[in-house]
Image 1 (tube, rainbow, N blue to C red):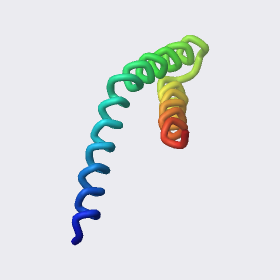
Image 2 (image 1 turned 120 degrees about the horizontal axis):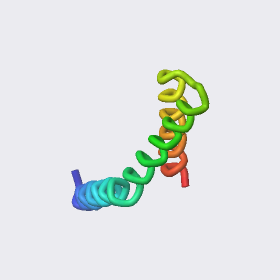
Image 3 (image 1 turned 60 degrees about the vertical axis):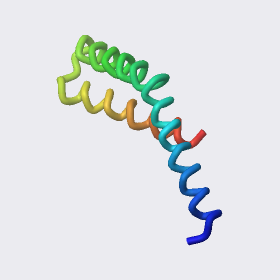
Image 4 (image 1 turned 45 degrees about the vertical axis):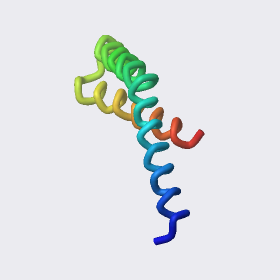
Length: 70
């Protein structure tokens, strides 16, 4: 393995670590609060717990996948 590849691996590892820290700090709390609100409102609207959970889960997965695309 050459020095350039080793250097790139180190830089990429640090970028991934920083991205995950940013995700945790800036997004996950907001996403979980929003998902909980979605869940609660669907329960109030008459959905079953399983349906409300599936809807909140779908929101969370969709939101997180969109964040990675941008």
